[in-house]
Amino acid sequence: MNRTMSYLVIGVAVVLLAIGLIFLCGMAGESANIFRLLVSLFLLGTGGGLAFWGGKSLRRSVTLDPENLGDQITRLARQSGGETTLSQAVSALDAPDESVEEALRLLVERGQAYSEYRETRNVYIFPGLREAKMVRRCGSCGTEYSLKEPIYTCTQCGGKVEVVRL
Image 1 (cartoon, rainbow, N blue to C red):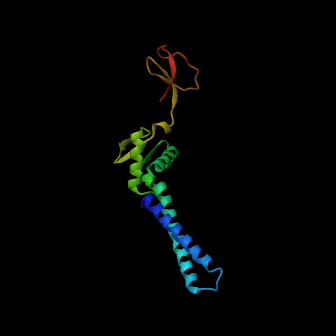
Image 2 (cartoon, rainbow, N blue to C red):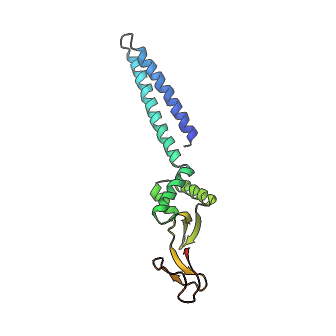
Image 3 (tube, rainbow, N blue to C red):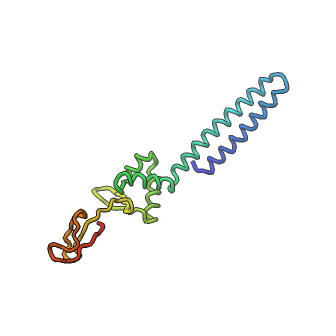
């Protein structure tokens, strides 16, 4: 159900609740009229039920919004080393496949992720979330050294050693 329908249901619920309260207040000055009491309780119950259902539907539609799902998928990818799959996202977020696919497509369009095919499945990689390894590397021969070693010239060829991100 879309947001417009949720808002409409909530609007009807508010009207029913207001009429139910009017019927209930109308009983205050006179003797107890069982008909007015039953109508009032019916309207209040129906309005309360519709308000609850409309609120739950609205909350679900906001949760399944591609923008919101995109943020949740990004958090999930951060926890799993900068990548996730459609099935991981669907199970972790408890959302329908179509909504998660749309959110992933949106993330790919924005350039926050890209899709890579691995072993019969699509993996979505978030380059901004991947851990970057830093090493010292010789610009001439490509020999790599640990950052812990304070080397500025290559021991193999004498070339300049620079810190690079892998």
